[in-house]
Length: 103
Image (cartoon, rainbow, N blue to C red):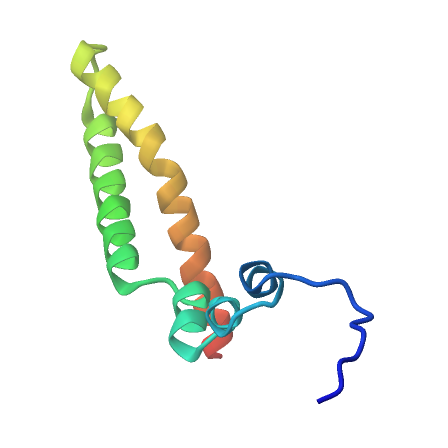
């Protein structure tokens, strides 16, 4: 048995394992079909909720249009309308994009 000189610096097993990426870490950054679909497509529950919020926005706008006096309830309605307006606008833009993509 011949003893040879080790020319590289010695590294303990624990340190070597921490330096070499493991298979588990490599799997973490790979994309799979379900993971890619989850990030690219909106979940159906989210779209349904946005549709309900847009419908509520439309109902509140109709109710406020019929009101003539300025009461604390009307202030709350205006506040809720302003909160829902962005959801409604985004849903309309999303539906337009889907219509363009389908054609």
